[in-house]
Length: 201
Ligand code: ITT
Image 1 (tube, helix red, strand yellow):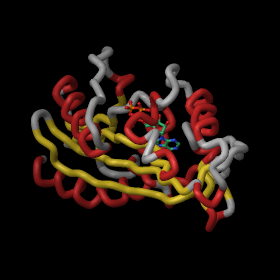
Image 2 (cartoon, helix red, strand yellow):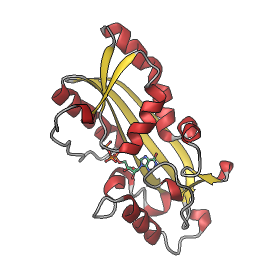
Image 3 (cartoon, protein in one colour):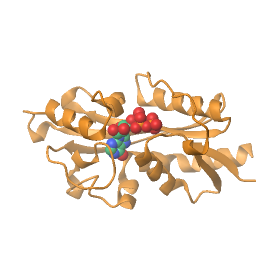
């Protein structure tokens, strides 16, 4: 019988990216919409690692199912690492446009050469009460004032990847998934995830 795994995110953009990479694995995938509403997890960890673990264990316990969770965000050097673990809630509203507006306003006056940043993604697979696999991925870039591109979500329209001369919102989804923080974390987790699935089945 195929292992059942819940992808525990309420962020549609993340869900689509994770499903695109993982859907070929011999696993029966679930998402939060397949369950009655579960209590929200309190993301009060100081690191992406801590929050990803917290999310995976929280939802694995509530759903009583193996769970894959991602904590991710944007780390901007000129802002001392902000928005960091607060990326989803950087502006009060938690809305992508408001988050981006705040980001650009905080960076006003900072020259382009000093706008280095990275996306970070920590991915954790857990079963109820136990973390099974952890992985991390990053992608380096710069923050630009003018948004470019319609793809992706969150800060993508302002995240410029110099080698590609494009923002991550300008890349086709498959391209973003090959090079992104999330894509790298997923590639890093796949073998261990397959091993965990066969060991525990
Ligand atoms: P879940 O906790 O339900 O998974 P969330 O959006 O609250 O959803 P996080 O706490 O991990 O997730 O915050 C991630 C935020 O970081 C996300 O809302 C975006 O603002 C930003 N982010 C992460 N990955 C991104 C990406 O690939 N492209 C653009 N922005 C990204």
